[in-house]
Length: 167
Image (cartoon, rainbow, N blue to C red; front, side, top):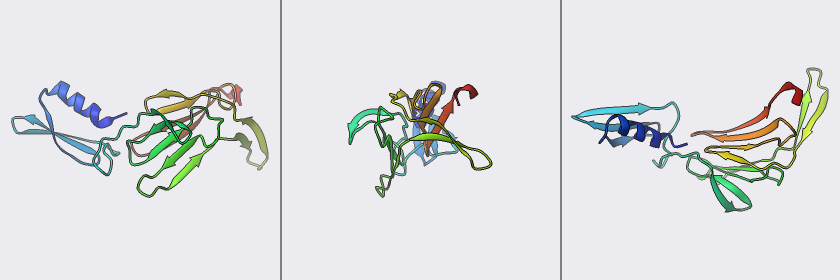
């Protein structure tokens, strides 16, 4: 998702001929004609620290054993198409080179008394891509999915259980 591009398109539809006059980390100012300005401000960043537009869409790649990448934000993420093939997600800070690698393994339930119960282990699942979201359906068995979503300033990991009967 490229929020800055969506803003530009919306302003162009509403005010044809409007041009971006200035931009900041989380805002865009348009000159809409006649000396008037329009400023859109967002709670999170829409431009990188370098001033480029953030775009969280996953791109198909073939890099270091990863098949998906998101590199147009203040962080970079690489993902494997199949969640079972080790080191499924790699988050990187491009400034420092620091990396965090995520690999789902198994799901266990721990009750309030500390007793642990095995629920599911990782199964082969191929990623489905929708803009900034990667979903591995049934990665932990029927009705249990892993999902990673890139937003402008974070990587969100979800474990989705379709119904209580899937526990």
